[in-house]
Length: 410
Image (cartoon, rainbow, N blue to C red):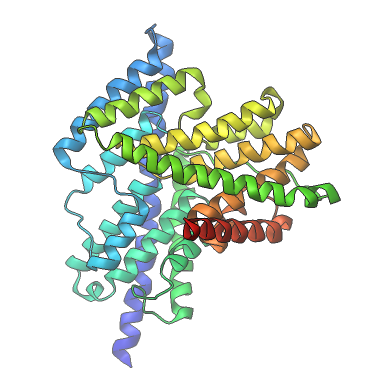
């Protein structure tokens, strides 16, 4: 009995420590990213006149990333890959932690259409296993720490602790990794998330944040025509999800024939060319989404729809060319653009109706890609009104079901 209590106390203590360390690592990473982005994309081009600056920087930067990856390995690893390794190997290689951090940072500095969650989850999971290997009383719970670390990382990055919890839990329905009682598990998630979020917020308040939050959409009351459009919005989200899978496969097939370095350079050329034509396509998308919410009338509905599909295409080109990162932020931005486009066509630039369209399209899109309706729902609480809970959940579930049946039929 005494040993069990002591082990649980250690587990609770280290979950708090892991949460706080994760929050600090995430803050430091995002702060360095913000400073580097400011230097590369604001100070440098304003100080020196360089023709075709975006194309030159993206091409040269991608070439250097290719050289780095050839020397040090295929990093960063995507979130699904990290979690699959933990499940299959019951451990995670943390011997190249600086490489993991740098490989996650470089594509973000370059303006790639990716998010930071992929590289950071690998770093936090590696840290958890380092603790397990170096502290004897933590070894038996290393797998639990790794899952708590993933949940905290996602929760802090997306300002939604529940998203981290549901993303991990829906990933591990078979319970092969976490074997703790449900009440204790949720308690540990809560403690770690509170420690991680608290540490991140304190550092952000003292020294400034490195990543802007997703914008908040206005409160609205759906009207009968909004409900009529519900099916259209869901189908649009599913179409965009299907486009995501098709472009993922096409980009993988086309770019895989190129040798390393040439593959990354090709991705950089695509990024630079598309960024010169439409700068809104670059970076992860949360800042562009804020600008869209604040001034949506500057974009015609057709342009918004084009941006949505090109954003998905560019995200897959970046990831498959080796300029890797997460896809959550860019995909959310694409869903909002397509929802705004559909809403504007039917209702004009009525912000409330457009927000409803954005919520449903984005939920169906993420549901079709992630197949985790609860995780999608709590993630979208971050920016959409809570009164849309039912419609967001139904749309995410519908998107998941439709895309699953579509794959089965094929």
